[in-house]
Image (cartoon, rainbow, N blue to C red):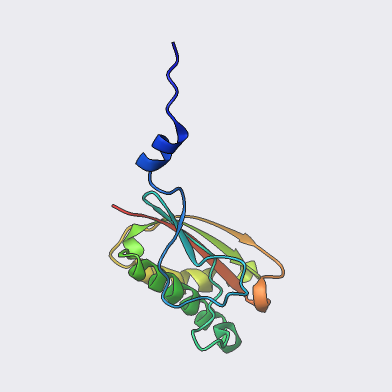
Length: 143
């Protein structure tokens, strides 16, 4: 005999499937995504392109500034959720020009100093948002 659990009881005893997670600053309502979503013990972060809080695109100041801007934005989301770069388990990197790969690595790896490096994928992508030279998205795990 199969026993069915009433849906209302099941919903009352399980956590919400996906919840917006804290972010360093509110995003404009016109943007069609959340900076981060928490599902259980996993934090999924939207890709970051290095845009600085004042609205100026750091990539206009050069590639290294764009990497730092993207990684600083990721760091802010992590911090607002009680996490740090040591909690990042996976990153996906999109580069407008794969020739920038060595420069990306040089600016990216210091954020993980003293911590294990996460799994990572990278690919060339033409036409990133706002003409950015890169986009980085990460997934982190709560302990």
